[in-house]
Length: 70
Image (tube, rainbow, N blue to C red; front, side, top):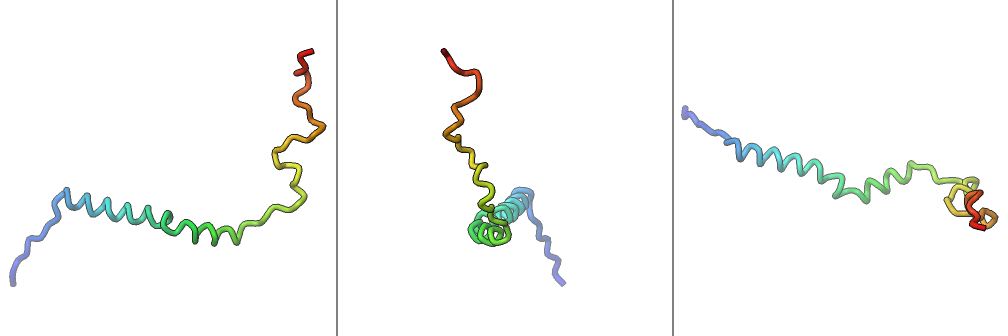
């Protein structure tokens, strides 16, 4: 029986750990279009009743009251 003294030095070990973490973090970025499409199917679409909440100014709204310079 032969003894094998195999080890990973701290530099190589941290490089391996960093590569594993980078691989796990990059998975959502790589598959982001598929993830968006999947979650988009489950989200409800807004109904037509919320048309007033678009953030636009109505024609009768002339601005904040009391801002006339006259």
